[in-house]
Amino acid sequence: MEIRPIIAMQMPPTPDQHRFYSSLLFELGAPHKAAASLAVLERLARDLLRRMAPSMLIVDEVHHLLAGTYREQRASLNLLKFLASDLRASMVLVGTRDAVIALQTDSQMVSCFTPFEVPRWRESEAFRQLLAAFERVLHLRRPSGLAQREIVQYVLAASSGLTGEVSRILNAAAELAIRSGDECINLQHLEHVAPTHVQSLATLATRAPAL
Image (cartoon, rainbow, N blue to C red):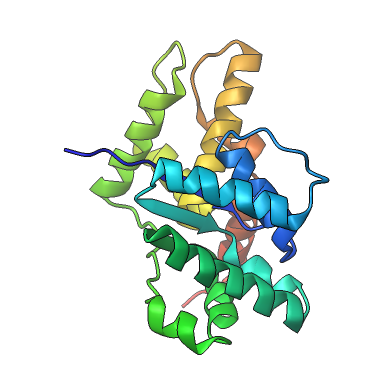
């Protein structure tokens, strides 16, 4: 069975072809001069991609396209279409709902890419399994018990059910646990690294009118 790599990168904060290729080359582990011309960076990236023959290219933060002018947006969309055709590999574009708006300005992009919204997590066995999986890869010296109901509910509320936020919160809590010498994540660590959103939820709850 042939094993082909998957490449993941982020769209630059503003749609810029030069920065896009530089970011792509960085993810490919290719040394290059950032000040090189766009043509040089493009040729180097295409050569490397053809040699690697990836099965998929994932581009995150596609909604950053909207941070540029109309001309910059068009140029970046054309770049994505060109790469998708040149690679002959699957391309996955990831972003907020604004990413859909950015893609809808190009009829070819609309026909080539089908929008799929990732549902937010809810309290469930699947979410507990996700937290348990995070606990296994964090490699703390002591067990954290992230699948406990109190921690599950806190992380769910603090993250708004978004996987990226779950990852950010748990990694920050793990770093705090290591610095403190506890070597396990507890509720106090979570409250320290992600207090604002949960506190606002509690405030809203106390202000809710009684039925």
